[in-house]
Length: 473
Image 1 (cartoon, rainbow, N blue to C red):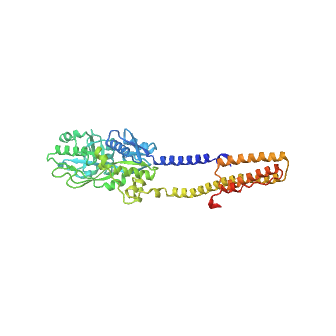
Image 2: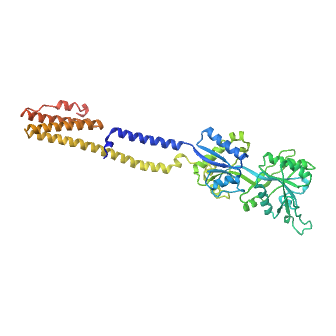
């Protein structure tokens, strides 16, 4: 056994190191988790919302922190998530859907809102055949989305400068066989384009409650003879989503755009896209649950700075199995929050608690064995001294040689020095020390008596008994 283990200072040093290691582990486990979140496009409402969320987490000293990294486009943020360079990302699935992305929350839905003058004859999406549709695009993916819907209805988009091929009024060609001219516009140009008959209807992809959507509807009303606008329905939303799963079926509630009478006068079915906060699939379940929980718990604070926070919602699902196997899967950690099945500390780490308890018991047994081993080694050392003192006692009685007696006296002094040093470095019980004192005194007395040629042995019992407590007498 190494000598330093016998020293009391070394034992306390080991205890201090162990306590320091435990304190360091506690500090490490209690520090907040920092996640890297990719957001695009720059300076859009999604970027402001996530930055406000990151700031709110820091102010509230929550267990999650966000490092917001802006990108030029939502396509870039999705690519960063897929490459593993970010833990979270704002994603628009119809633009790019990362293969490892799982939804935490829907930040907001954007619907394809088509408004047409009441006398245009456009009531449903298929009525756009042979018409000119003005598109107020906010993102490069808006026009491809409209083109995908046109293809679903067997309509062909044509460049803005080309005249659409009208449907055959005689019925030789069905209306759906026509084409639709897509005319890119700014919101401020919609009223003039309708008045000049450059377009027959106007479209925008935006949240129904957004100001940009209201401006387009108001512009169509302003250019209509009766100051009205028809919100064109896309009633086949569920079927479209089956073919184009990156899109969303959206319902525009009655009265969304206000007015007297209310606009629209009844709910309108349409389709659109969604902006989602997604996490990499490998993100820990409890971490994903915490991100989702804090996002909705801080909604009121976020809405004070970014009103779009009021549009956040949970993804639609009926069961946990459906959520994780949906066309746009939801992260199991987010499902835990939505289903109120977040695990407690013991539930989350019960395996570790069991392992610690199991191995901790073994470690405790090992420590106890080591303590017994050290105590045994200490006793063995003292027993060796006691045995030698008893042997000296016998040798002293058996010799009258002055040189031999002197050597025994010197040896006794050496043994005393060794015992004293051992007692200073280690805890030694009173009974053992009494035995040592008795043995030392007896050996010295034997040497002294033999030097005096048979003088009587001195009595030391009073000194020995003084080492024992009264209860042990």
